Image 1 (spheres, rainbow, N blue to C red):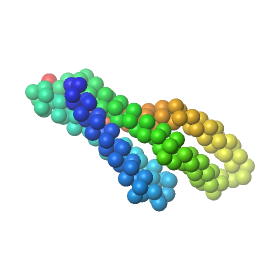
Image 2 (image 1 turned 60 degrees about the horizontal axis):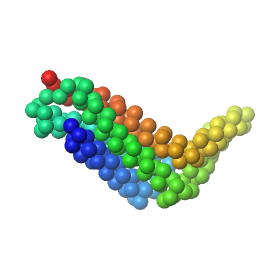
Image 3 (image 1 turned 135 degrees about the horizontal axis):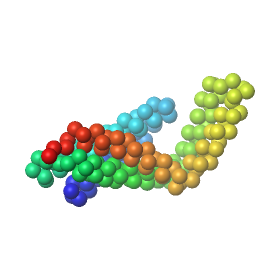
Image 4 (image 1 turned 90 degrees about the vertical axis):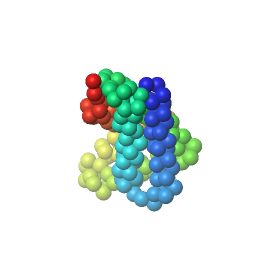
Length: 168
């Protein structure tokens, strides 16, 4: 089981890094909202290795059988590897490769709020946005949020994959 987890966790991690780099270099001119959607698509694609890892373990290493519990453990561990790597990549990107990203992101968000809210509600929304900005300026907080986002999606994919693939 350990080999499968490491192998498919590495595939997921490499995939999420490659898709991130492709989007950074090739799709940089797209709007931030479209980049966000593509980011979630990249997360789901990289976590598809959860399904393939469970299937590989069942078919190639365990004589066509895998319990729901073992399948779920494999999926969670593959998701965890992918999530940790993406959290580290996100911090490296925002701290080293593009340290102006947070300022650009929040300025874009503030412009969007200015266009969406009337003056009497705008100040409260801008205050909320500023509080978020301070929170996510902390690399540890940014790492935790990004890794948890990937992990939660991976957990859902692990549950679904375990339901589909378990055989006694």
